[in-house]
Structure formats: C-alpha cells, structure tokens
Image (cartoon, rainbow, N blue to C red; front, side, top):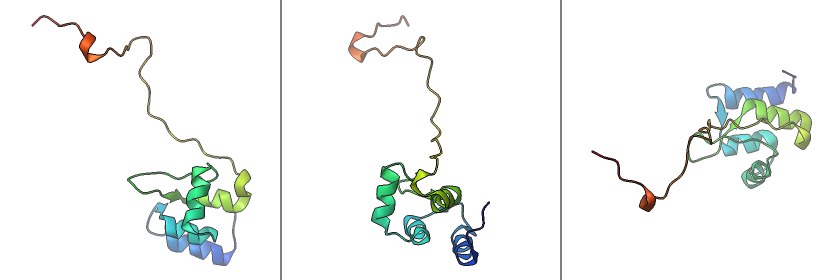
Length: 102
C-alpha cells in the first residue's frame, strides 16, 4: 500500500477504522468532491461502488486507487452470479406449458 501522506492516511483511518465500506458523504470528503460528483463518477465507471443494500458504498482499495492513479485507475470487475447452462434451460411461457401427469 502506498503512503498518501500523514493527513490523508489519518482521514482514511478515521473512515475505515471500524468499517469496511465508506458512505457517500465519507467517500466524497476523502476525495474532496461533493456527493453528486462522486455518484456521477460511479455512474461513469470511474470509481467502483458496491451496493450491499439500497445505498452505494465505496471500498478503501477503490478510493485509494482513484487518489493514486486518477480516472485512469484500472476498474475492478464486479462479481457476477453464475448463470445456468444455456443448453439445458429453456424459457417457456406459462400458457404453453404441458400438464404433467399426477
């Protein structure tokens, strides 16, 4: 981990000292932007946001990458759920389903 300087490291320690994800206001304060700008950066896939619930949250690694590398930081891929094998599954409208014998 690259040192960002004592003041910035202290700010990161304050935000991430007791939790793994930063709120929008905390992340915006760390980056020196307002919440609307932070959300716009996330919408443009410049900074990755995660959604553990209804609200967005930011990881320490993603915020550090943006501070150190700016908008050219490599975007971490989102984990996608596994997809069922396409050869075995077929979507059939409910009205076209055959009745199974009881």
